[in-house]
Length: 326
Image (cartoon, rainbow, N blue to C red; front, side, top):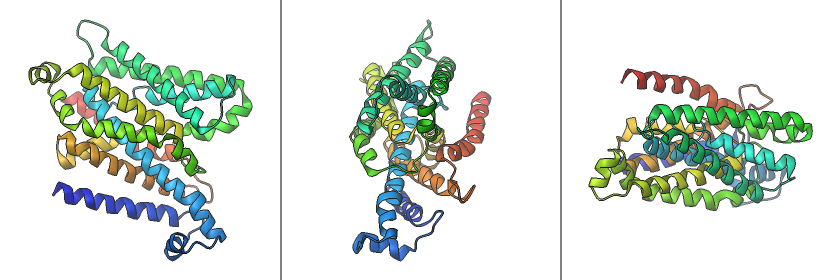
């Protein structure tokens, strides 16, 4: 049945993406959407579909899938139910490095931003894991959460300071820092998809190993696994997924928290199923959130990062309170 439900989820994702292409400030008939694929004629509607609506939907799906999978992996590595690229400072570090290099080094272009975001995500994630592991008791959920919150606040403060020193850069990057897929071009996805695909591939191949790691390092080692190697591979996949996502759409929060918990409720604790389900449901959530963000303040659009925050904050509070009671 899990295979059937996964196929149904893919069909839902297809439907949501079609709706994202068709509906917005200006609705486009579904027949026109189909004709833009089968009989492209260069009309304004067909041009908008191909150059604006389709890239937006595809990028939202890719980013949503990557962030959800990254969150699922991080929650196993840290044994922390609220771990995600946004809460452990990975997104904030990537965003800060992009802002830093754009302000002082004049770096532009999606390929350059991709490498900068990956470097920032690696550095920030490494610092958080280091701080969360200090002490005799090693890494604990409380220490990793405090370290992540501290690094998120630290990099966010530095980013805001840089924005105040460079008004021109502030105008160019403000919408990106909130998290948005509006106005994105397919070339931006082409620059980051190899890293996203590599990160997804590593994560999906690790499903069985993550199941063993979730039982504890000692038990995993007793079963012939190498916990350190699993954690390093998991960290590499998270950096590739989070860095590529930030480079494409900015630091969108809460997808990595919401989706893994929903998936565990639906399919259980087997990461061989959690990870593919997280990818599909994460894509559905972000595409649907982007579609909904167009109707909050029409004719203007709200960045999708604001929409995910509206949905994610109550869920975050619920998970945190649930964790305290257990």
